[in-house]
Image (tube, rainbow, N blue to C red; front, side, top):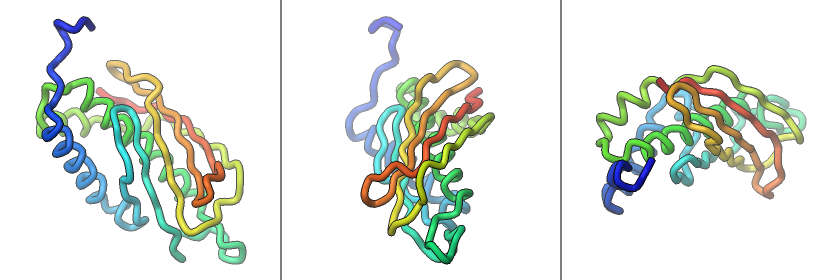
Amino acid sequence: MSAATRPPHRSPEAQIALENAFADMFANVPLHQLLGMQVVAQSPGKSQIRVDMQPGLLGNTLHQRLHGGVTATMLDAAGGFAICTAIAEKYSDEDFEQLGHRLARIGTIDLRIDYLHQAQGPCFIATGNVLRLGGRIASTQMTLTNHTGQLVATGAGAYVVS
């Protein structure tokens, strides 16, 4: 896309308002509330999601390990949220209501998780990165680290975006 056909970018104030609205939208998903997921960083095509360990998230109580399903959910959420930020950048001439119609179409098609280490610690950060945002399909890569930065799991996802 040439500079002449690229949509105008939002003002810094409008971008901050949009990011706050996205973080609120994410926080209001009932499953995200149940797991205690919160957005800690976002930029076009990237996201970071945090979860603090709590007893209800344990998959192995003896060794205090995060449940594998929570790991997968965090990675899926980070990938999906990264796509939201990429779509907002691609359609920077649209307001939050217009973007909301686009975001409502996002759905996970395929998710692959590789569990690399025991998920132990007081908190975890899932990072999502958009590899490709096509007209119909988006591809992402995700990582999950613990409080020391140890890589706990990686993921790759494909999402429908139209």
